[in-house]
Image 1 (cartoon, rainbow over the protein chains, first blue to last red):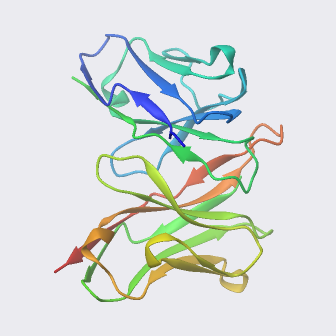
Image 2: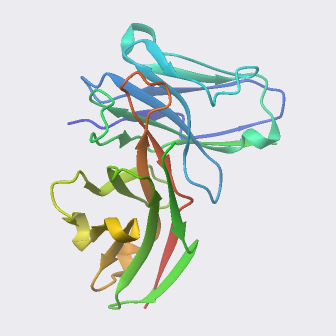
Length: 115
Length: 117
């Protein structure tokens, strides 16, 4: 079974530029998550999708971050414009239906450096 | 919202020694609990999870964790550390912010495990 795919793996940009990350979840998984992991910290949820609808985006900085999951499969996370504090690893995860007991499967992450 | 606290941001053990990584949860209702491992430059991988079926949970790579309600703890242990265990370990608890019946994970700050040869 293929895992969660993410691209690119690494990205270096200058502040005020824009960047986009792509995620392809495990086939059949209805729930997709984007987490931000700042160095030395645990992942923090940015946004959660159930199929193509947003379940929770309360911690997404909406003035600069946006995300979509068209057709309920792939998802894209965008930052525009980027700030220095956005330097982090962006992790995509998916689970079957978002239940409490369900395992979330993580992709390898995209490491973003904003200069 | 549910939360977990991991004591010790960095733990060092000798190869072959006992590994003990601590996690305490805050909840009046025993939650489900997860331990994930993150190897350098990789995503998170599930080690084990507590789903109330049994208090002692066995996971991959020889790790296990015991749920103790009286101590609100879910500490991760391994009898004998191996060099390949060097990684960062995260305890996590599911939380539902939206009330829609769909859960996300709230993670602890992580414990970095170093194994000394």
